[in-house]
Amino acid sequence: MSGKKTESPRRKYDEEFKRDVVKMLSSGRSVQDVSQSLGINSNMVHRWKAEQTGAGGTKKSLPDVAIGDVSGADYERVKARLREVEQERDILKKALGIFSRGI
Image 1: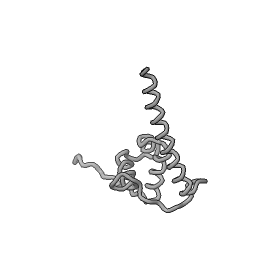
Image 2: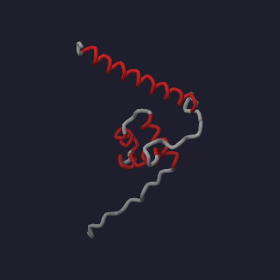
Image 3: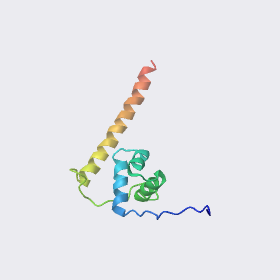
Image 4: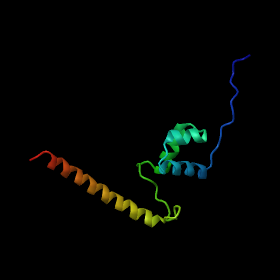
């Protein structure tokens, strides 16, 4: 025995598969969960996610397409509303802290 490992051929994944994996992550599943269920190394999933989000950490602009039953414009409107509600929540948390101190 020579002790050499036989190398298995490297698997190739198409862009559509990579996009589907990143969509799984954006739907709330963890990297570990996705990588285990698909039999992929978690580092690869992290790399695909980084490639999809771009260098600045923000998602690349996507065309205005329907996502399930929601159009891209509706999605952006809901995201903006979510930001507003989160700001309101943060303000109320601060107010609760101030009023709880018993001035």
